[in-house]
Length: 421
Image (cartoon, rainbow, N blue to C red; front, side, top):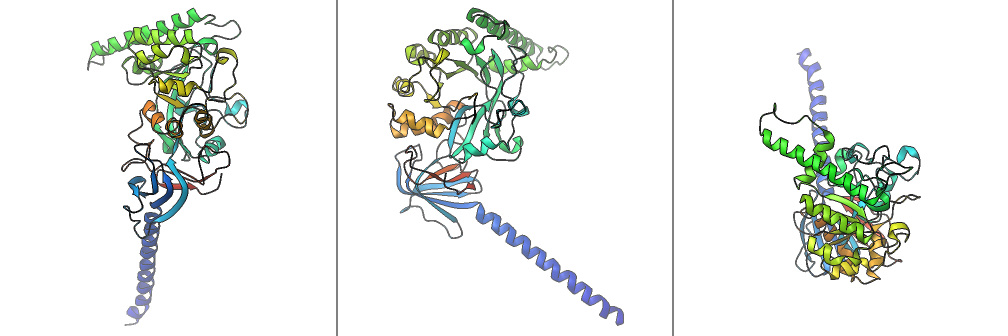
């Protein structure tokens, strides 16, 4: 009897604390569930797949968009966290950047976007250099930019690979959407060797590029001939493996180029090898629009406020509007800056484009749905539709007005900022 009297209090203690622990776990799960359920109500909601919705509601559940529509048709369920804004748009997309490889300190240790030791290095992977915690990533996110196409920058004939990331996460694995998006190349002044290194002329650039693509073609042919027999397959070559993806049409060659005659050279190479290319920069693209359109090539236009110098001396703030009128797909980019703060903000670049020929929604498309289509990620981001990633930007006025602010940013269904920016 004494033994029972001593044991019962101990059992009661364990049972009580077990119940408390289960209750705490339940509360935690409920809290997580509530955080994953958000309703965003905007005076105007731009879905980018139809007319703007006045007094619209976007319901978010478990990181995805659940429903979108007028408040009169979309009831907000109880328990949802409600955010309000004057204007709601999809999370913005920067279609070409080096952020995460180039850092805000502007010191050698955080400038990993370009290796000048050799002119051709397609094997360099952006995922091996990207710093998800880089201050500039958060800087862009604070302006409503939720997706970035970033990686190795211009300055070499083939500088390396690019990738697509969300502007959240503590590690690259948490941030990455597409680990290998494109192979970055440069033609014109940016692709010439420095200090007497090859290539020294434009014709040498094209000759070297063609030679490398021919090697990749041969590599692919040998792989195909070997079939499933590993003894007949060519020895692994990480450079050829990277370019083989371009030859097979799996990823595009991203060509940084500005002069009209260099653009035509890029189109000529693409036709010869039957590869997909995307023009990056293309300051003089308005001079060869017929050729670009006939080739079916999209353009990630130079930043509208880019400095007009060197190969880009003939750039125009109206280029985006001219290309769009010609039926050429266009997206906006921040590009690469050699000085601090090391990155531009595509929200502002799109605003300048809107002041120089593009309508509001056309300009917004260059940093949302059109950018997503060019990057091949429109099934996930770029518009507010059920099933897509819940990436949203909230504003207290016209996003392209200087006096407006970003008041909230949502990435993957999580509120990552409610600070006025």
